[in-house]
Image (tube, rainbow over all chains, first blue to last red):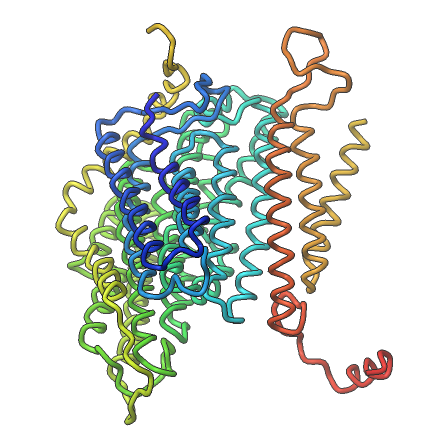
Amino acid sequence: MNHWLTAPILIPLLGGILQTFMGYAPMSLRRTLALATTVLIVVATLGLLFMADDGSYRVYAFGNWQPPFGIVLVLDRLAAFMLVMTSVLALFCHLFALGGADEGNRQFHTLFLFQLMGLNIAFLTGDLFNLFVAFEVLLIASYGLLMHGGGTARTVPGLHYVVLNLVGSAIFLISVGMIYSVTGTLNMADLAVKIPQVTGENLHLVKAGGMMLLVVFALKAAVLPLCFWLPKAYAHATAPVAALFAVMTKVGVYAIIRVYLLVFGDDAGELANLGMDWLFPLALITLAMGVIGALGANNLRSLIAWQVIISVGTLLAPIALGSREGISAALFYMLSTTWTVGGLFLVATLIASNRGGAADRLITAPKMRHRTCLSALFMVGAVAAAGLPPLSGFFGKILILKSVEPGANMAWLWSVILIGSFLTVVAYSRAGSIVFWRTVDGHLEAKDEQHWPTSFAAGALTALSIVIVALAGPINEYTDAAAAQLLDTSAYLEILDAPMVGEDN
Amino acid sequence: MELVFALVIGTLTATGVFLLLRARTFPVVMGLTLLSYGVNLFLFASGRLTTGGQPILGSTDNYTDPLPQALVLTAIVIGFAMTAFLVVMALRNLADNDDDHVDGKQPKQDAHTSKLEREVTGK
């Protein structure tokens, strides 16, 4: 039992509840407290990261119920990694929101913190049904955030997003029911013990349940046939929300890594590596689809939204192959791409606010304000996202390319990733040259309304790509260790014997 | 009992999916509600169907699993909240776009049908 595991859940919960009752408090007080809560989350998750780095599993059993009878939180390297990735991204998004995006709705900070709580529960939980509840918590907060800021443009994408995710929840429940009806448990460690013992007719039931679960996670992660909701929804959301949503697809990726490596891993008997033969081609097609979308985008924000889909494809391909190097490379790339895409969303919004009526559309417009600074930020973000040296995306993609063994898979992966990266570079250069270089005579009428938090947050989040390069060695060691820990599922099963409080040991 | 139960779940789900694919938000909301009913019954059945059973192991031969009932309860609460939110979203869509088409705007009608409609509705 380790009570610190509840910190990343309790801090946003309590901070969010506080914000709920402070709807009419002065803006500065609300902002200070909200930002302080996010800083506390970052501190707590960093603490958990150092705690998890020794490679052991830490368990928190709610109500002191021995797993598998109660709900458990489990902290390992992967969970800590995801927590830190999310909280750092959230800190900069929150800072950006203080520049004015949080006005217009009294509950913005509440929703933002509850969103973080949902994400943190999803990363920490060791129970399949609790994962469903975590998804619902983060989804209902995200519905509110997506609609935040008003404007009729958001209604229809928001409606599609809500309906699709409700259908996803229904499928999640059906698959949970199917798996439970055969195994009689939903604890992930216990499932990993029970699934290999399933035989006969029940095998098909579990197989169907497992494949439906993959559909749900693929919907969250925006894998190809289920990705068309994403570009519209993300391109229309408020900047800090869109940037925070860069991590939402990664929740789906995380769930795939967690459930399919542990429960349907190599030791799962007849169900070993369920669905992974489907996931690999789908991931590559998703990547290709994302590139096509990025090439066809007519504004900066939908270009970046398609970049989210590109990165999901790039991430899932090595995960589907399931080698240790591949998972490690995917984790490294996930860190890089999440922060970069988040930063790009913020930069695109700054660009839009400095271009007058043209906003972020890819059309010629009068010369924008702060052109040098913003174009430099955009270039850093684009280079990191497209995977050009010397920034972090390049190292992530190199690690992914190196991780595949020679063969047909390697040919497919290399060609799709390399051609895709090239075309992504084309898409970014086209967008950048139109926005920054092709100007027409005229001047902007709107006033310059730049606030320091927005510029600082956008700059800092983009600059994290350079920080990842500087710390590439330690980060890669950590992801290697995380991948090794993930593939050694026998250690995870020991949480079933974790001593509870009050037992004599 | 199993057959009736399975048929009910099947009918609810099929109707739900059919309504979900309609182009108006109201049938979509109804479809999602029916789908969630079907899902809740399905979850309930995942603990096997027994009548007059006790949820405590060893007390009788006729044992019923209490866990799916807890899962169903959670799913009902969440589904209820989500449906309420969806209704608000659908109303907002209707107010913003003067139309309850799921894509916001109706496809353009040709002159003939709109004339017919005017005649029928008297507008």
